[in-house]
Amino acid sequence: MPTYTGISSEAFRHPLDRQAEEALRNLPGFDFLARKFVEFFAERPQLVYLMGNTIQVGPRQYSTIYQIFRECVRDLDIYPEPALFVEQNPQANSYALGQEHPYIVINTGILDLLNEAEIRAVLAHELGHIKCGHTILIQMAIWAKSVAARVGDLTFGIGDFVSQGLLLAFYEWRRKAELSADRAALLVTDDLNLVISSMMNVTGGSIKYANECSLQEFIKQSENYQALDEDGLNQVYKFLMYTGFQGAMLTHPFPVERLQYLRQWSVSEEYQQIRRGNYQRSPASGAVNVAAETPENETEDLRRQIEELQREINRMKRSE
Image 1 (cartoon, rainbow, N blue to C red):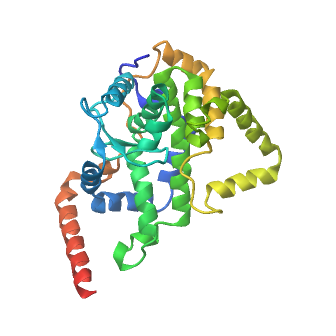
Image 2: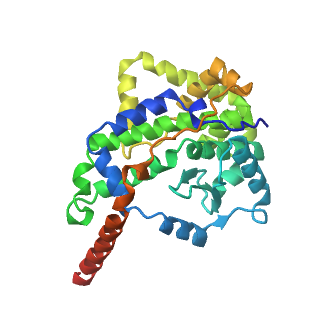
Image 3: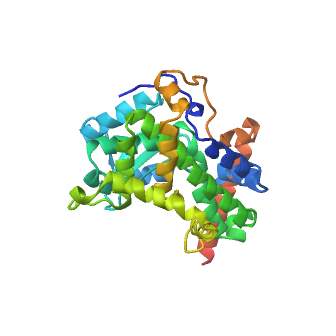
């Protein structure tokens, strides 16, 4: 497997990822939300939950998965090593979160459905999010959606600043961020068909009927999907689906759409240059460094505000 020593996330970050982030950061309300995120968001409870309700992967827990994981960490030159947890959940899913201490959670549904090579692609994809600094913005998007549903005193006015436009921009960025993470998976595996295979199986694969699934047919399906855009009405339907017209806003592009983006990059000169070792090595800032928006001399003020928030929550509980 190739190893990209010293590689910067900017070497493979998708331009649509950059553009969507810039548009998000320029929207009214983003700076305010970022400051409030620093004030009120607590990462430790998530880690406590994972330590109590999942299996942390290590040399003596899921040792095979841990070895694959460490190789991916090495290949993308990520330091320090993030934590990896396995959660008992039949849904074939995985995700990366965490601000100061990024971590990855992979469901047993993934481990049961995919082979080891495909699991490598999934882990590399999630590590791509960490490498690009996506986890902070992903966490902010989740938090923003939560506080938007709680207007008034309970959100201390935060909900008033989380407009529908800001939420749409968050989720538009989240979908574009997946394109960068897909590139990380391709870099680590150096096998386009393998990455596509992992996408296909997570989308609708079956252990029982695996021999009846065709990678080429899935690629053909993606081409047929792209052809739908010839009808302008279909483009409208796609937009409405992504933005929550038929339910929740989608956090990922449709797999058949991601496939097309990755196929295009796999034959690009940019990808070939990276494979040859010609890539940007200077440190990249990643997506958004929210903590940087709060000066050090405000630390004590923020701590006092958090303590006041806790007292207010306790007071409301007693008055119920």
